Image (cartoon, rainbow, N blue to C red):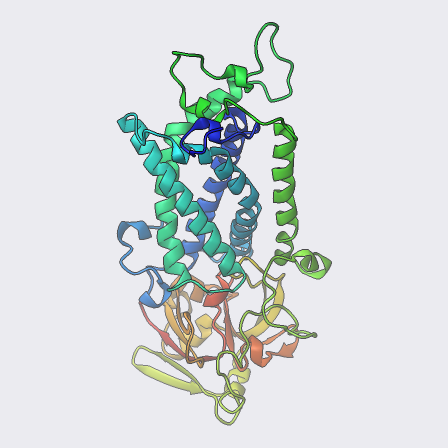
Length: 433
């Protein structure tokens, strides 16, 4: 047996072959396309062109395009798109690993390039493997709130996604016709062979002496070991792993017993029980918020715009017209809550205090009492400010906000990522950003 990985005889698994690899490739083609689209939607939800404080991807150039301002309805929009993004990403991990395993012999093929097209395919394969491992690893670490990598997750994941998708598209253009041909032209392993002919992925189907090898034939071992599982069984194992990961992740988008099934999803800080007993990521203590600075005697909300400044205590806010909205919270990590009943002052009514008409309420820059954190300051677009469901909330589910949920006041906006629903609000500046 050859000791060199560049020799086909080195790789002896009887499972490798064009049909097995093609099935995995088609699954990834659809799944990664959905991941990329939902990732772009998540990027757009931050309204990155609205204000530099919302954009964590400096010098993005044309890569930072998006086609529309993020809407405020339906209220579950971000909850759905980001939930799909995270759950699908986790569920595809077994498929990705199986695909990488199935094509690993091609990483060692010699000569490195037989033609320009082959060289381009090999380069795209290297970028594809590296990009996939990077994106899936940083994504999993992010949803676990484990930021062990250097730099901002947003920046790393954003640029990594573009490198990966460029390699993915190149590889898909070069290989999809072959994959589809393999699926159409080859019987599934285990099917009865044609009379007088070899099984399509048996060693006997490898090219004969003097016959040029096709790229897909490189995956078939010329000297396979005895099989211990069929290719159908291997695909079933991979699919079962994906379903198990999906089942232990998807529950983080629901409440009640289903949430307890999300064993692999982040559960954040312990929220306690009662009306404020729903998930949070960061506590007041973790953000350095003290009881003194949020007390009724000390805390004041500063509202500015059109050259005017208004300072309001919590009691002053309570005397303004109060409204209720049933809205969920959804975070980039993929978790979300069902609708909570929020009550507070409409953002557009606060804009009126500094001279803006209700139907002309502009963008707003919101600042928190917290001293650190990527979204200590966040901007909201005018359509978010004007929506009647957008509130500076004072209470939730019939009870004052808890300190961990943003007491004395927090932003709640329909369909916005959780980080834009600023907690412990100290200042709001209305005006075009």
